[in-house]
Each structure stands twice: as structure tokens, then as C-alpha cells.
Length: 95
Image (cartoon, rainbow, N blue to C red):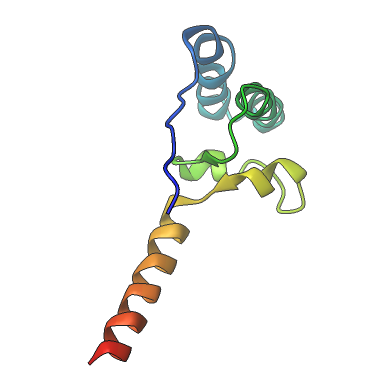
């Protein structure tokens, strides 16, 4: 199993994209939040990030399912559920 490196958005990215995404969501400015989220994701991907964990329910629901940026994103709740199912199946096979 390969290792991984955790990369978080740097301060300018947080101040100019991620925090404004949240502020836009609070103002119900979905289009603004969607555009800022796309920028934040692209900044991370340019930094050679392979996968982005979208830990906020609100952010996960901003982009349409067919958005190409989502192929690089993980829903942590979905990942946890799948992992739990796989673990349960492996335990059942071992008994």
C-alpha cells in the first residue's frame, strides 16, 4: 500500500477562495460559491494534489455531478461507508 501526503490550502488560497466559498454559502450566493470552489480545487490540483476530500456537505453539493473536477474529489462519508462495507465482507469471509 502506498503512502500519501496531506496538503492543505495555503493561507492565500484559504483567504481568497475557501473562506469566501463559505461566506458565499452563508449569503445563499450559490453561483459565487460554486465558482470559488472550482478555483480552490484547481489551485490544489495545480499543486500536484491527486485527490481532494470535500468534508463539507455544503461544498460537496455545490458542483453538479457531471462536473469534471468531482472526479478528483472524495466524499468522506461515502468513503467511510464503502470501507465499512468492505471490512464487514472481509470479516464475514474469514469466519
